[in-house]
Image (cartoon, rainbow, N blue to C red):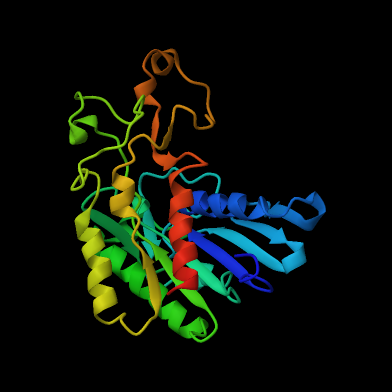
Length: 290
């Protein structure tokens, strides 16, 4: 893998789940570079851009925070817990200028869109935008707009003869134990076995968003040689693989949370080592055998 990346930039672009896949890739690669002097890990002051460098290979593996790919009011990589989320239409270049020159791009975007059935889109500047400046559209329409903009950016900026573009499908959550036959009110907390039903699909998984991607890639996006990493179904089974109560807590837990760990269990992100290493095994295979 390092030889393939020699002299190249590999960049993961998206949200914290893509950051997890980036972290997995760095852990897998750096284990093959025993010398501390032969590698470095740097983060920009605003934490938006992280770069792992394998000096001997003149290669970098990078992560860039852009949870919607488009410009949004949640672009701060540190402070982004915003309930009234909105994106700016046609703003892919806002973040895209930081992706230019990458040889391998791995995009993702999904969970941040799932705040309801509708989503706010603004046509003007995002800074200072008010609720009345935004137009409500269906979540699927807004998501399709961002996906098409991403593909257009790829057309305009990537040489398909020398570069590769990947898109990682939606990462499932496990916040409702009744989905897999558990007791009501539970979640991934204390789950230690995977789901064995091959056809399992949790209620948190929005097939309508997956259909948007399929329709675009089979339609007006068919000209872009994008490799789709479909990790959704295989990840659906892994209710046991989340960070649960072991995630870093940025604020002290309340007595109520301590008394009921289910209330603060993280059933969105994944432990490492773990499931996202499998995602990268698939990425590795598709990189060599497209």
